[in-house]
Image (cartoon, rainbow over all chains, first blue to last red; front, side):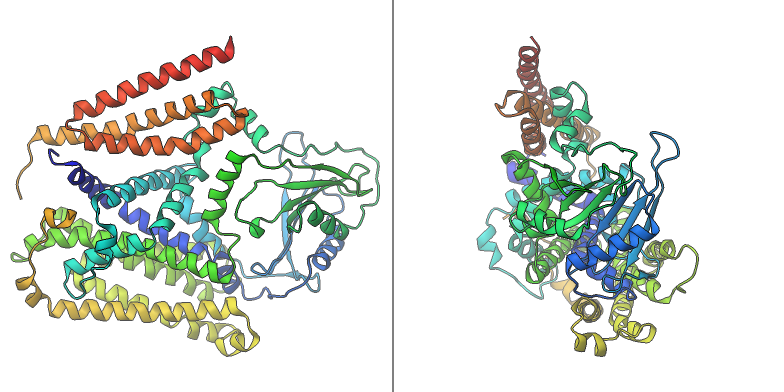
Length: 526
Length: 97
């Protein structure tokens, strides 16, 4: 490392990118899928009907249901349906047996039109990708730490990559297709530069989201090690009245929605909490749905007296630094995005995934050239190759397996949701074994072909196992369902193309091998 | 493949450690000094400090790999940490007296 600044940054970019590349690839892919979390959940629980009903009507149904089934509960939680998440979810918490304990929660899904209980098949749905994206299927808080560390490495790799790749705009217009290694590098640069603002935003915001977990020093210094005091100040808990012990009739909840809207100049209610329903001191907290603006405000809420309907409290306006932090959160989550913007998020996420993937391929390809003649790869290169194959094509196959398990597992099997997740990880693990057993290119082609088959056949599988096939969903305009099928079909076609390309370049490899000149480090940094 | 000398490998390890651990300490101290010195309500100052700390981390990491030797990398981080520690210690002491 006696070289110049840009060479040093190239070194940093290369190694930071390699070591965390596979983890970042999985994080980016699942995060990208999580932008369509609700749509994926809808496809995975086709029993829950998508209906557009007004919030008022749904809330009245929920209140009636809870009056009948949970009158004695200490707390009701009602999640109102919206355009993307059709289910009306009600939960209630029993009064804890002992003080200080958490009372038991019960959750039911209701049909927002009839108020009847809906029994969807047991599944984690799109929530699985969302959770994996930042928890990595690890116990709390290790997954969050690891993913935030990966985000910091991503941040370093991005900035060092920009420094390395000085002539961003000039090089952007030089794409040299069908040149083997050079095309991969050009592709890596192009896809990195094209959505650079997205990369920077998504990486930095992921650090901001978990900043109080990973960087608590300033909280400890300013609040004398009392982290709780900080959170109480940032998210002031609306102090709700204590239990009075006198029964009283709860007022209808639906009119409160309109009054909350007035408070927020049109903002929607996402969730209601009713404390002590049936008591004289009942209170209703209406929490704002974040989807109507970019700046996310945690716990923006209004509180009403549950019996008289008097306004008890509103949360104060956000200050500027908190609004900035909130907008990083909002931008990362993209709750505010409509269909077009959501697709743009999805495409940018795929571009980020592709940037990481091409980077890994470039790393290996450059080093493989040296061993092309002997045909024997040293252990570390073979390791990277296996991880590349299993980490990329294997992950795709695992995602497809997750969807297949949702349709193929019997509806009433015990631990069904867990088995869906298990099949994801079993298939991913098998892809590692397969990549170890087969030669590099053959493993790529076979796994990509399998991914093509599994994704491409998803519409057929859906048609065979449920009544909601494309012929119905397209006619009915159920775009979440139809869009899922069509996106899977599109992915299948893409993987088929990728497998075919890989196969073809394999047969032409010998010719390329003679012509290709190794890309020297000087070449790369310029 | 040319074999790299052990001293080179140790220097790289040293830089990595400096970047990861030293960088974190610099970032944490930077967030503390900023949150103690910023003239804002306490919670806002803390949020601002935390948000900017990652930029300090980034600069520290880049410094560790850009400077001429591993020793200089450590030296730079230690000096920065000391300055930041004095700055935040001063603010802490003033706030408590």
